Image (cartoon, rainbow, N blue to C red; front, side):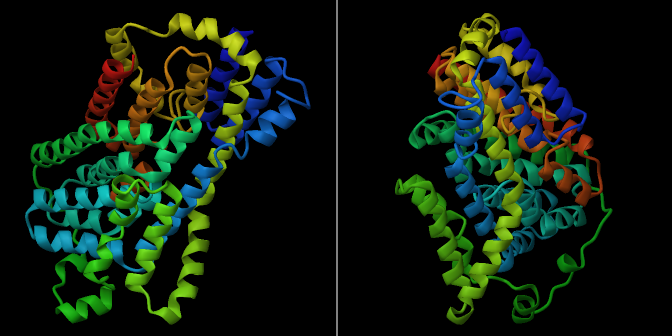
Length: 428
């Protein structure tokens, strides 16, 4: 029966790769089929309807709320001009020095990446950052990749990601945070290396200019026209991170703290109610796709954790899972491409189910599975040509997502290798 379940999973991957089914629908269908194959009854304890669908759907509720709050904060960064001001200040500071401008946009992208992910993060940093980089001679592919690599630097400190791994793998947030802090230096070094190497290797290409960058109006005129936020409001992205990482405040209150700080530092009292509601509703629109996906992931996790599924899959998965430290690193490093194109190791797809199997069957400690999935997530978030942030960044820069994948993959592959090494030597 375990072989049949694996074949069903493979069919699900094929359906997602060929876009016969949207990812969320495919995951729910997979969960129901796996539950029936695991001899789960229709109703009652450990059943398809009550356990897999009813209990699985809200299993990642804390993650969904964190995603919504992060999206809300992202909309505030956009509407209040905080994100745009950060990028413009960096561009002004960099002047006509391409590498300095690119490193500045990289830094802003990392800051935005700690608040929200996916396409909203790319847009917040890239709407001004990508044209500004191209205007000073950074090649288009490098410009798109810089925004993505920057977001990946911020992902280890993205609070909704902490909540997701904590809930999905049943780990304390402190444990997730501890590994993410170890992963951060690899992401940072790879991102800086990308900018330094790619901007110099490709040379300067003056192909696009941006009026907003070329124009040099007076300070007051610029702030009135472009909507510069006050300097103290620019600290907004650091607020939730300081609360969660420095003061050990829970994730949802930390994100709410960021929302309130952004609001108070940028908005007149009589306008607060309208701005709160407007940005909250906008946050719902941004958060709807990932929340839908997390509902499906929760259902899939409930299915693969059923006793029948665990018993069927344990001997098969154990037989092919390396236990030796060196083999663990080599095998899972070689498998990195399987997290691309919505592949089987994509943690926001079938990879979540595979992670659930590894934990439920006891083949690896949950912390080791965290290390593996978080390392793969660094690759997916930058190089997957089907991810929304990669598609948006590439198209906005005027190149194809596959060009961005080929240019960034060696760097994020190295990040995954570093994360797997830390995992193998500390958790196995």
